[in-house]
Length: 473
Figure (cartoon, rainbow, N blue to C red):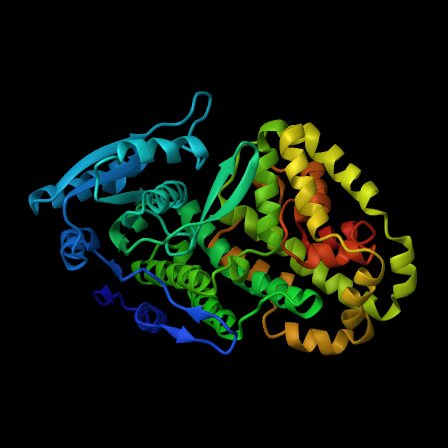
């Protein structure tokens, strides 16, 4: 198992690639109670890395027939070259170019293309995904279902999903994160990544820097609900996050050294998520807000933005909510909060009514069931909230090492060229309000959005949060 590179001139990169190399060889019986390991065996990040693809195939002992999967854009960016170098090396490779569904401008990660890949891969021995988030999620899930390995050829440093153990797939109107085996190898050619649209690199920064708020939410859910949490995993994703922040300005300028840091950081964070066997270290409240905007875009007449750009906006909201909520905890009357809690039936009806008009009745029912699965009442609610209401400072001492303020996030985003307002992403004030109110409900993951809702303060703090986050512009 190895991580290959040529020297790209960034000390942050050297540290990240060293950690990646160690993780590829790690089988860690952790004090958190879980065994941490990944099935990814090679990571190659270099200028001209695509030429090393045949070597990776040989070293991984992948033989027989390969299906290379791309779309029109990613085939032009890297697919044709990948096909050529494999053919010249004697590999047997066939090609599948995925096309957008009727009425869509781009290929989306839905059930249909996953099934297409599965059908076209009949008789193949391994898959090669050429692309970034969408193509990799499609191939990752198809590979898992077919029980054959795949290699990822990265075309943009836009997300952590290359090396993660999940695939984000839209089934009907619902965006799901499904367990899926990561690639056995990741080949990231910095020359190709540098040629990707600059907004994709900005999205990568947004996705990677979100580890801070995601880990804070992850720890919060552990403290209040007893959910699983691993300090070692949180520390690992924090390393990726911090090294990226150090070169954020250089990333926006497209420097190869900075892009290598971003690429390595994204891959490292994804490996950590796979080792945790949960997406919680990298998917908190800001990600739920982004997924909400994705799901409701057709009904609202919006064009979907890159995930990492929406996450950045969502994290500004969640960071500001932490900052506005915490000073209020000392004045909470917990008995009154519990007494005033809407009953589950009322909460379910409100949830269903909101979502049904946006994503249809069947999908709305699925969301409602997810919302109810974490909806506490009575004694359960009291016991869940008691630690943070009784000792908010002690709880904050455990959260603060993971947390980043809205001001800190905004500074990094501006350095990286990330839009920091709803208007810049084509998101209306109504869509902003609705995401704040309802995004937490479609997944059983506890975040700061849930805590504010449980305390009855979510709506009361909304305009203050937007003002501090500076997103409603």
